[in-house]
View 1 (tube, rainbow, N blue to C red):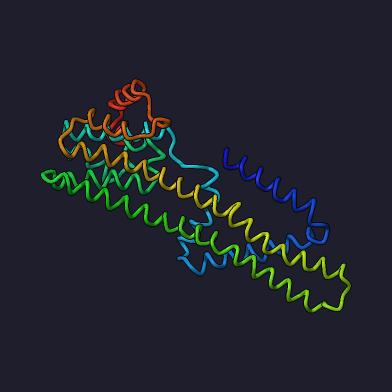
View 2: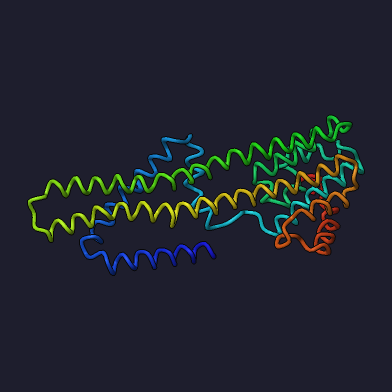
Length: 293
């Protein structure tokens, strides 16, 4: 909401000033200049990045305004999910969670956390880590290394999209100059016109420079910065899962591992300890699979 308010404030102030000072001819040129610079900007993103990175970079505008996907209730669902899986593994061995981690889409444990089940990165991190522990619990560092690698790959891919937006912000002033030069070329072709006509054409040409600078520092640059924060916030969700599972692999009791993980969650998103304990207790009555109900 704060980002949306900031966007409205910037647009009202900047374009309000443009409307008051730019004149009618400049306003008529505005859609053309926006289309020119915007189209060239999208083209530069497509040229400099793979299709998947370009798609995520352009989608970063929406992500920057929506914010991180994980909320307080999602962190609670994560801890309840991990607590249930760790308890089952502690009581019945890793064979007790084999059906859950091999087919999470059929697991009632994962079904209780649908947003985690629907997130490929989070679901894979949990399942792959427990699977590796089941294969070799004698080396807990191996599971932690695997989780670090998985989180690193996830963040690297998403930070490429953030970098693409930063590159776009750096390129926009130059694209604005290109648009201005095109306007000047057009003006020079009408040099025999009256000063009134030439002044209007030059003003329209300079609009390209204005838009390039405005879009770079008033929109795309701040959006890229906010998008980077969102990526880091969503990566923190995976870090919490890693902290819990690493503590469990080192021999900590599930309750202690959960508390160690909960302590690493930002205070604004930390689940209430009492509510978390009640949710974990209620999860003990969840059947082993959907078909077991």
